[in-house]
Image 1 (cartoon, protein in one colour):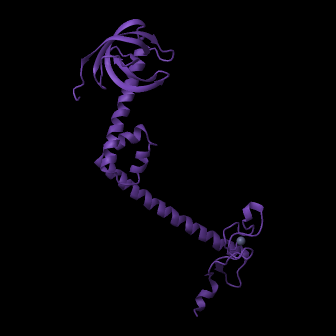
Image 2 (image 1 turned 180 degrees about the vertical axis):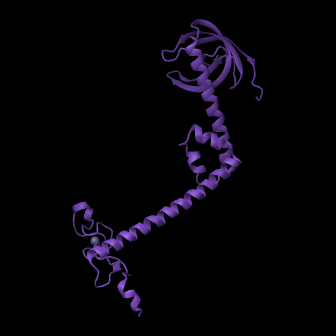
Image 3 (image 1 turned 60 degrees about the vertical axis):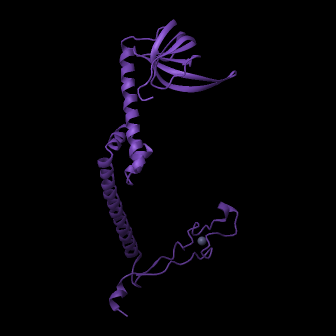
Length: 243
Ligand SMILES: [Zn+2]
């Protein structure tokens, strides 16, 4: 036996809790029977994992344990640093392969895709998805800026019976008591948009330019948005190029 170790604490095996015998539970209805000595931790809270030299004072033991904690924290910090460095490399590789993810990180830093890309290499599918998301985001920002400028300039959707010409921006199936009605949003070049039933006689696609006559009512919330009713004399002016 090495005498040099006699003045050092020795690591001992954890001792099972002397109240619950290491099960973590006692016969009690309090806290669902969780052991009140170890609080369910199973190890005895006062019989430590260390055996101290016979002459050690409580202060020496406390100082030793504090040093153990400090070392554990330092190890954890080192692990965190290593993980962060690894993640920085992963992120840089992702940005190089998919510049859109960097743009997306600025636009929407908390997005699920950005969070994942900070930790794992992106799949091809994710890269394509990121590019699409960024395009959509930029489009929405640009549209909102244009709309704000138009509102500031006093542009409003015309009301009453109007002939509307614009691009179909999207569709929505709306339930009514008469069944499902297919609605569309048409953006006019003047900068306003109208929500209206797809008129009978035409079957437009997104991106098509359409023309119709309808009675338009302005939205209370957005002067650039109107609700059209009873659309007539509808035609598709031009079809979207990719159709
Ligand atoms: Zn216990």
